[in-house]
Length: 492
Picture 1 (tube, rainbow, N blue to C red):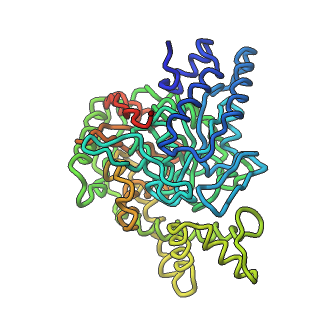
Picture 2 (picture 1 turned 45 degrees about the vertical axis):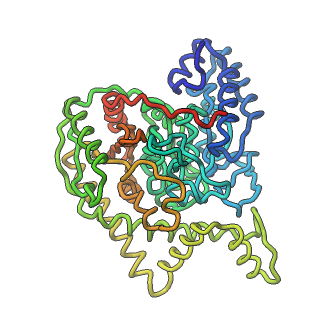
Picture 3 (picture 1 turned 90 degrees about the vertical axis):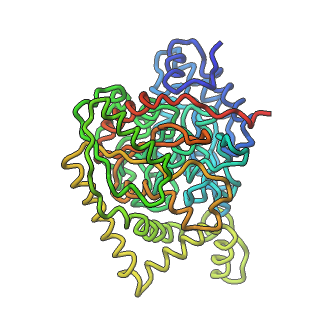
């Protein structure tokens, strides 16, 4: 008897193709898992009827020999992606019961290739957060628990719902987005694989905007091969998105298992930050050894402007957010609060509709863009961004990829950092540089800490060279041999 919800995407697709299981059976098993996992709060909307109808159509296509690359695979969709006829809220009260009349390009590609939508996944409000605690629907709970305590842990953010759903075997994969680490940090916290592709690899059309020059869609999956399969379907040039790259989409999955012998891998010295936990340092050393054993040459490199990345990011991202979120005024869609004048309606709607973290970032963004401060903050941050990109360009003249930790710690407890925004923002210390430079990066499970919680390793590649990091990620995945899974404490 096949454990349907325990399958990887790759094995599930093989079983579907061989008719060992039907799409309806596979979808029903995952819908049942979704119902049992409601204590995790990973979904904000379940679409069971739609899922079963999509599965029935998939079975017909499989029988007719017209199956797509993802035919019959049940997945979850982060609620930042607009889905035609299905409520899309970006985790915020201000969008209310907004139901788009259009489909995001990324999800349109997934449905074209036969994927089945189980529902919309919880997330930090407008993707602003590192712990999934800013959601209007409440926090997502990490399916992992520390061996030292039963307290609830964060799955990371903003794609916490996506990561938790994959880690708990509710879905075979999930869409996610990454503005400063929102795919990779949750993947690290939940023992899953998450890739943030090159900026422009996946279309942003139909994805609710946070910071337009930083946002990029990508998948979270159970394995490196699964992430590669999903990314191929999600990618592709889109004329509706002016930032979409007119680049061919490789068969990323063929890169997994490819020899990496002779590749030069850089180890950036600036990522050894003060106060780094010994277990993160030890994991990093193991990653270096695994790549050496596979025939790679490991070299020290310098990215001298790394220390300025976090402050630059937290100027640029809020500045773009303050502009993007100006459209939420209660006039065109979403919720509306009452007021005597037009200005009163604007103010009341935004005060009632936006959460505290979103308000904080809007205020920061408006401040750094204001007269008298634009040059001192925003313009200077953009200059730093250019220097960070130049650092990567110089490094990639001599190396093929970079190896770093994904996050500075394992998952922390819900509520631990909510009163200290700086402590929360420091979760992005190893990830924001990649977004500022527009590069691809992947997080791969590398092991666990002393309490049994997952830890991730990050690989950073050249622009549009996801294939190299997939090949290296396959080596890390095989060498680490992580087989631990969270105990299903959420099942009554």
